[in-house]
Length: 226
Image (cartoon, rainbow, N blue to C red; front, side, top):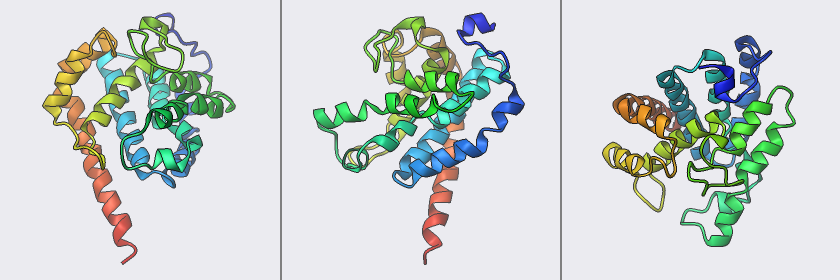
């Protein structure tokens, strides 16, 4: 896949430079984790699935790393969302949902101030756009949406659907697959969705492998205080 097809200028973006950002990424995720533990584990699962999707698509390692980092911080804008909305245990009201929808723009505002993060910031800004143009914040459609954003959107949906929250039980892998199939061409990029569905068992394994790790980590954190 060429840089022109990807829609990104990768000049000067080398793996060694990207690896230097990992401490910064960890610091950002830790700051958000201090308010919402779910977001940390969710972001890590989405990052791992996004990188695997890049492999399915044959994307080069440099851009794959950009997507991986963007996925790690795709919800960083939630740091600017009020606790009453972010930590609410029930469903959000319409007004609360409008506040929550500001997080991609807040995330973009944070990340665009970091030198070398322009591509990452742009991916984060558009990770809630939809293929049919009914997403947010800009209502982009089709290939107007950055490739990285389209990849993360699908990984994000998979993890959100399969995760249990206080107000609902997570979907089974089969039910989640059916939802993905139903929304191909409306919410999701045809080619990305087709690749994920072709390798469905593998993507679920990637998610569940990290989910098992996060549960063990969460348990160990709790037992430290006893």
